[in-house]
Length: 262
Image (tube, rainbow, N blue to C red; front, side):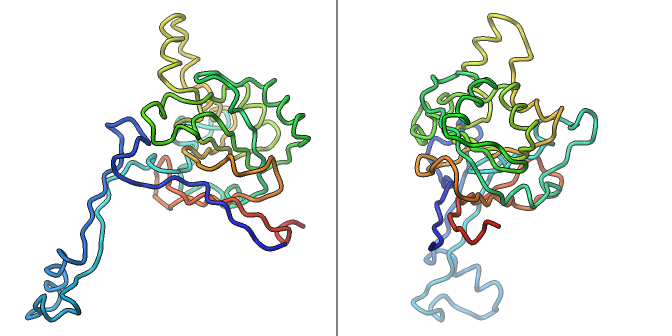
């Protein structure tokens, strides 16, 4: 078959609801018309008029969190330890073979915003699509949040993966997961209400905190998962190499190509 690529990543861009406002990326654009002075500084005596069409170069200054855009979270983000006591690995230490594997999609778009997915839900969805998990497969979760990207309610939309649901995957050898929501866990605005009623701190970030027991990574703010079937493709999501960081940006791509399979 011909190779087919499906882009699973959002843009890094200004003025689009992708994060709470205080955490949004900021991009400053310098155009060919206002950068001639930058080139002149390298070549004494050069004038703007000496450059073809008087143009300099285009360049951007970007202010980012490692969790802006489509990114891969390392175990270090979740907790200081993983695997019940080992030092949690940072993004530059994530095994590369975790980041290019056959993938499976779980379709949870029907769950309400704030719903916490259970192990039984995961098992039922795998049965529905007729898929048996294999070690190191990448599991991505399609939530309602994918349809709300860029809208005011995006960070509050979609279901989240609970501790038991996450452990169901990890105990079967999965080491990299992903979601099209802002967080792997249920939106904080929904969890906050449950915490206020119960004062049970174990509800907070419970899917992430599964990494204390079994170290794993997950992708957040994926896009276009609706275009994917349940399985039959690879996902590539190698993270940017940032020493000691809790996450790294990635251009996540689904790759359909029978030649990649043994």
